[in-house]
Amino acid sequence: MRSSIPCVVVAAVGLLGVFAPIAGCATDPAADQNVDEGTLEIPLQVQGPGPSNATYRLSATFELSGPGGTQTIHATGDMTSVSQTLPPGFVQIHMLDGWTLDKSDDGETFEPVPALLGIANPVTVRILANHASTLTIPFLIRTASSDLMITFGVITAPREFAGGLTAASGTGDYAAYSFRRMDYAIYYEDGGSTAEVLPDGTMQRTFFSGALAMEVFNDPIGPLANAMAPAMAGGFLQLTIGAKPDGTQVVSGTLDSGGEPFSTWTFGPEPSFFNMPLDASGFPAENTPLFAPSIPFTLETFFLSSDAVLTGTINLRLLIP
Image 1 (cartoon, rainbow, N blue to C red):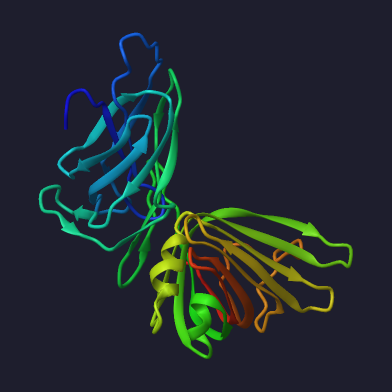
Image 2: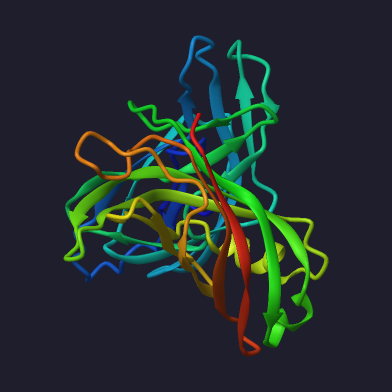
């Protein structure tokens, strides 16, 4: 890398697992320009939660597009952090395929761990003049027995929606999915909830997500697993449970992608076969599992070729560690 190109790579081992990439590069301003630069502090390693105090480190290649044109930055796990000044403006960061997240229990021997990006990729960052920032971006670590969520200084229990997905009909790139059955998993950070009483007396609670990632399994066609699901990284999940005065509960929700191809997935409203427990105020309780089978859904995705719509039913099973 030439000395005339100041660069920054952000890899914060972040919420929902580990490793958060952020990066920025720009050419030196001309001598007659007066540019007030901003500063980024970039951690590349983090110590995880739990009694093992494992260390996680990121190795990745970033393609950066911004005021300085397009640059490629290589970050290795041997670097603990990077601090760099950048001219103000928008920088788009694309983490290229081939990144690895490694874990060490002794601080010496590192092994790769399976992880999902919890933000959109690429992501756009705005560099502010005369401002110092540390960028933390979430990733989710998946293991055969558990999911792990990590942030700097905060450890939060991860949540997961998982179950079956049955397609009924599709258009565009989803046309071949009719009557196909697949499996899915949505991993997300708990983003809190709100509660309100509706005019008909329904006690309604709406749950929100923070960082989010998604996978589709057993996809015989391809677009759901290879395009739609990865683009959900950094998206937003909203789930609403309404406890009606007659004792029934209704489930509805939306899932919006964080990147391209952009998708909106709506499900319900539909009566829930199994009711969630209620809290002392009569609202659906927080921090409790949910199982709502056969909830109708509509998925709309805006592919470059054309818009595609898929309808069907989904089993909503909320898993809380």
